Length: 316
Image (tube, rainbow, N blue to C red; front, side, top):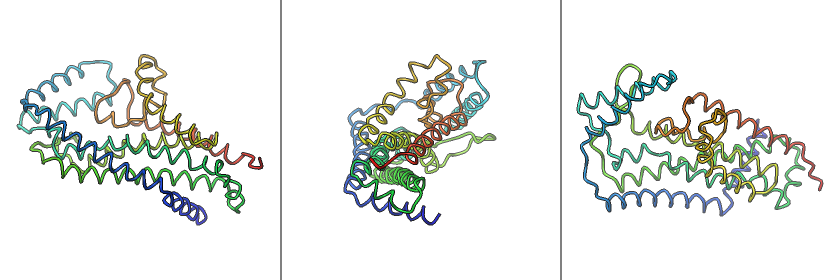
């Protein structure tokens, strides 16, 4: 364990000694600040008149009741819809307005967009952390140390994920600061059904929860890039393939939505925020099922990475 921790420390210091790492971090900050600033600017330009929130809630309640009339719903889906129904009914009965989309609280809760930026930067690190050792010719010196190969690869993989986590936390902190700068506090409340009653949700808890869900996309995509970089020793190939599946995954899911096999494709489950937003393309899947499918893919990716790295001949 001590050797592994030492290797992780060395990899972490090596990563942050590179100028590119700092550039990516500042780029993340600039992109998130710019995204929220642009959102505020567009809201100012649109200047949409406020609608009657009760009409919107009543329309949503009607749609929810229609969905509950579907006999094909699985138990988890029916339970979720029933919870939504109780929240909507509570709002109408007690005149509790939902939070406005342009409010400060909504911006803090909707932190899923941070993952979309973090995944692009984490993939770059994941793709090159092993492949660069081959392209720079340092792999022989690295493996000449009296350290088992699996420890070396583990240190690199953990470093990649720690980098992704750090980017997510930095992005969340920047989004909070920008939310306080650009947006004003809302008048409504965020409500949830806890299984027994309707209660007020924590804005900070919801924001961190959405951040956690969006990290699944970062984790899976970075692991795939890590595997490609380890197997083919090419960071450019790993980055290209990883970004390709990231941007085309939802299209593949839409094309295969009518087939049963879509439930077992990794693209279907990478965006776990769909369980909160309700934007689900495939019926009959649940959060535990998605987590199980993602776990299987992660294990497969790592088995391929470790097997290739441990058995590879480095004499050439």
